[in-house]
Image (cartoon, rainbow, N blue to C red; front, top):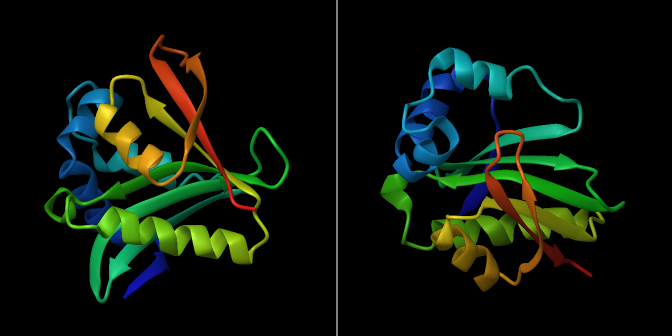
Length: 156
C-alpha cells in the first residue's frame, strides 16, 4: 500500500539517500556532484508557502519523494516539482503506483490539471510521463540556459 508522509528536517538523511540513489538527476541538477545537507536544507526547508514535500512510502519503506506547488500557469493546476523514486526501487512500478496515488489525491482536492518540467535530455522521464497521459506543452530555457520541456495532464 502506498501512502504519503510529510517530510520534516529530522528526515534529512532519508532525503539525501533518495537523491544520491539517482545519479542521472544529480548529473543534470548538480553537474554530477552530490547534494550536501545544506543544499537539501535550502531546497526543501526554506519553504515557499504553497509548496509541499512528502515521502512516498510502500508499506513502511521510504521509496521516494514528492514535491509540488499548487497554483501554476492556470488556475486549478498543480506543478509537480519532483517525483523521485529511490534508485533501488525504479523499474518495479513504484513510480507508476505512486503517481496514481498522487493523481487521486489531487482529484479529491478538486485540482483540474497537473504540470511537470523535464530536462530536454531526460528521455526516460519523458517516456514515463507520456505513458501516464501527459502531453507536451512547450519548451523553455532555465536561467542557466538549460532546455526544459513542460508537460501537462488534465484531470477532468
